[in-house]
Length: 243
Ligand SMILES: [Zn+2]
Picture 1 (cartoon, rainbow, N blue to C red):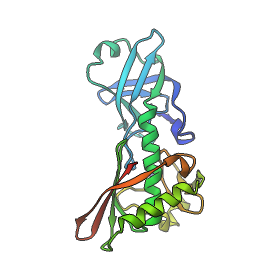
Picture 2 (cartoon, protein in one colour; picture 1 turned 45 degrees about the vertical axis):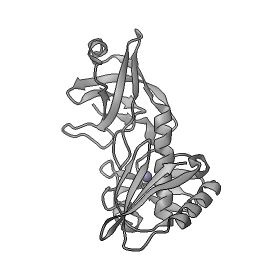
Picture 3 (spheres, protein in one colour; picture 1 turned 180 degrees about the vertical axis):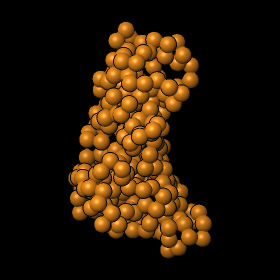
């Protein structure tokens, strides 16, 4: 039932052809997919699966599949409510065209890349993060005051600087030898596949990340800090929105 995670190599793929490998209470499993499953703080993708006969199944969410021997790449496509009639036409082995809600995903990509810029501007450990199409929320483990204007100005510089964003791979052993690369306390590096993907923003940031990102910081566009608050004695919460 293993899934080939096409978004890992190319986050800009909006659709792919795939075969149904299983259908169970979790949802629909495919041999390959462009749908990103909820993880690393980033929301799962929504979209559609279209059958050859024109039947369309609305997908509300994508999650990591749970089964014996599942890898972090194994995804399950969760049908939206009310899809029973369409689902009845789906069989194992069926060919489908899997297409993500690109508008929503592109916002995830812009906000996720922006959250890496935050790591560069505010180099505190991240103690929780959530990236949706509406906002990126980061909990930073610090007691230092955070100046909204200074952070917004620095983010604007980094977006305007049009830094290239790229990925590279290292082995699990190399990752274990470089713990300083890990910024997030709450999200473990995506290990277990024998290799870990690093996300590099030229001259700005380098950290393990399996999420989807834009190719250049210039694509992020305007950003604003919608909320900045003390979450606990040791944590500051920052909510970032696309301007
Ligand atoms: Zn990331």
